[in-house]
Image 1 (spheres, rainbow, N blue to C red):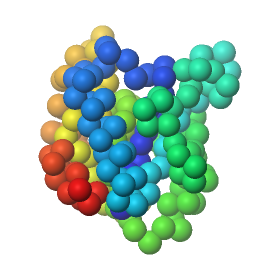
Image 2: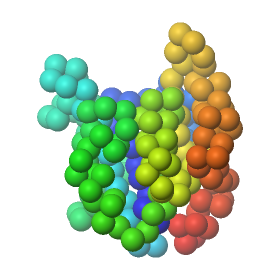
Image 3: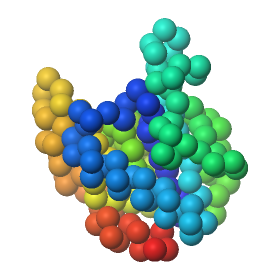
Length: 173
């Protein structure tokens, strides 16, 4: 099992996210549980390019303080929605015997969605814990609608949606 933490960056983790308090608490608890139980945690950051405010060297690019990577934890940078766009990430995962990915982070309708679909296409078993991905309202739908749509409909058959309690059990809690 690998806990894949996507785009939990200072410029994205914001109280305007859908169900912010639940999302924040649950993602932190899963990272803590994985670390406690020697489950590998991999972080991925989105680099939107120079001048965007979300690029290497920018404060908003940094992973939030409460889950900042520990020494030895892998961190990959991506420039497209799917984590699999990073060749080093893709190669690293190929070398791992365990093909189970628990995916948490931001944003449901962008990088989480693209990564879930890419992982499924590559034969990974994808686990999506309840309340551990989120997004913002946009011109087309509310954050709540987007989260429910992807978690309850789009990813059906591509990922195993589990309760938060089940996710903790999977991580050894």
